[in-house]
Structure formats: C-alpha cells, structure tokens
Length: 92
Image (cartoon, rainbow, N blue to C red; front, side, top):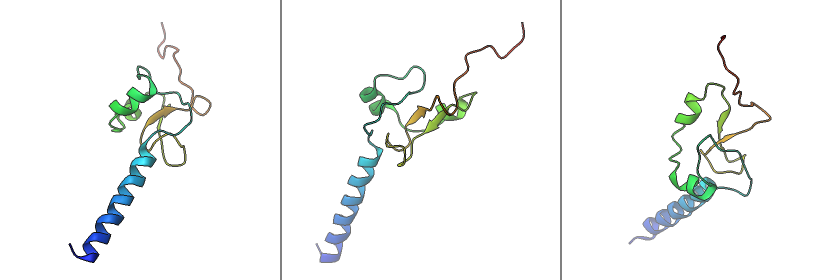
C-alpha cells in the first residue's frame, strides 16, 4: 500500500469514528417520541429517518444535532419549547 493511500485510509477511519461518536447518545436525559423503548434500545432501533418529526401534528418532535448532545438525528421532544397537546382538536 502506498503511503498516500495509507494516510487517506487512516484519516477516513478517524473521521468515521468521530462521526459515530457524535451520533451516539450524549449524557442528557431527554423526552423521546411516544411509544419509544428505553434509551439504549431506542438508539439501537431508531434509523434516524425523521418520519416521526414529519407526522407530528404539533411540531413537537425535533431532531437532535451536534449542539443538543443527544445524538445526531435522534428524535426528541422539548416540552418547554413546543409542548404536546392531547386536547381534542374538534368540537363535539
């Protein structure tokens, strides 16, 4: 293997390791979408597709970024910012 190829492989490996570390959950306790499993199982099962964010009628589900410290792309609810309303949205 040439020296340049080795360094490209090394740098790519380090970048992938750092990216996976950022996607892993941080140390914050967060409110997950309704029906979510416990935190470790949720992080293993969630594919970070964002569909829960798209279908939330109250726009309460947000997607984590590197600034949130909870894992990139993982859905969470910030109840103080946009609370979930369980009140009926229709008149009886």
